[in-house]
Image (cartoon, rainbow, N blue to C red):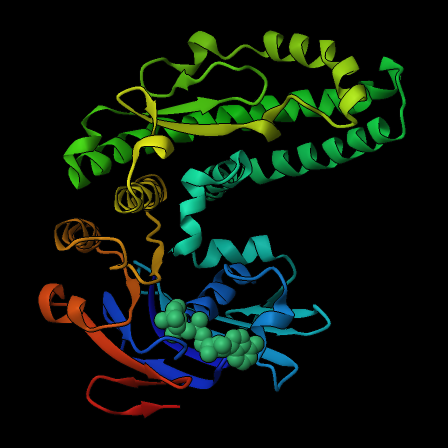
Length: 382
Ligand SMILES: Nc1ncnc2c1ncn2[C@@H]1O[C@H](COP(=O)(O)OP(=O)(O)OP(=O)(O)O)[C@@H](O)[C@H]1O
Ligand SMILES: [Mg+2]
């Protein structure tokens, strides 16, 4: 997707911004607190219906207003225009329109304009809990395999019901049977989708990681299903050699007494995780901050490439303060992948160095100041 126009109203300090004339690379430059991240947040709102910075929409809506809105016009690879509009208010109500039609689920919205964000929070992909990594993985699976969402909903509902039973102390297996059946069937299907996705993703991830830093020469991506402790090397072994529905079912059912003790379901696809090792050591224990950032870029760009390769979808990249933590060599390596793969990127930075030294040909710079955004030639769009 290629964003051609963005109109933002009342997103944080951006009371009204209307911008067009974007290029493949769009650099938003301005001092601290000027509104750079808020602009990326606005774009993310139109893609996902929510902010990547805050769970509470009241924090995102301008303090002096009660409703925010974002409108985006974007063109797909076939030259077709898509118009997305979203309004959200402090009462948590939302209105979404895509090409003039109302849509009722935010999940549906994210299919229209896939975006990938790299910001400070992205470090959680390495340092955070398993759920951050499985959410990242599932975002990709959701985009390439539409049945995934259906199975995931069945799974989540059944898991919720089962956990309710556990909380209220039920101990008879019969009472669990109906939910266990759903959890096992949907959980196995979800895991198969995840593994099929990882087969493709892993190739791109290893390629980018090795390209970004020689230290990553001996890198490996492992996957935990959520019901066994083994860290399966997703590249070396084919899933059909080790993925066994019987083993899931046995382990799951024989764990009931533990589940009752802890009052929640301990095993299953909801406990899946990704595990990155370098020379067989856990990446998060051995990497510097800058190296972690390069690795995160490799993960996100591998995700973009998997979508591009399997679905011909080009996600838009929102790169908040991309130059932070990266030296020129590492920054250039990341920029050259974005350039070669022809993704559209919105990059924020506190200085124009990226623009002066490394800015590729198809680039445009925007100045951000006190919630106003102007193009580099001085036109104020506010
Ligand atoms: N709900 C809100 N209403 C109005 N202003 C807000 C709201 N939430 C945050 N702000 C302010 O909006 C401004 C822009 O914040 P933003 O995070 O976009 O800045 P930035 O340009 O990315 O800065 P930095 O370089 O420090 O990352 C800040 O001054 C912030 O305090
Ligand atoms: Mg910022």
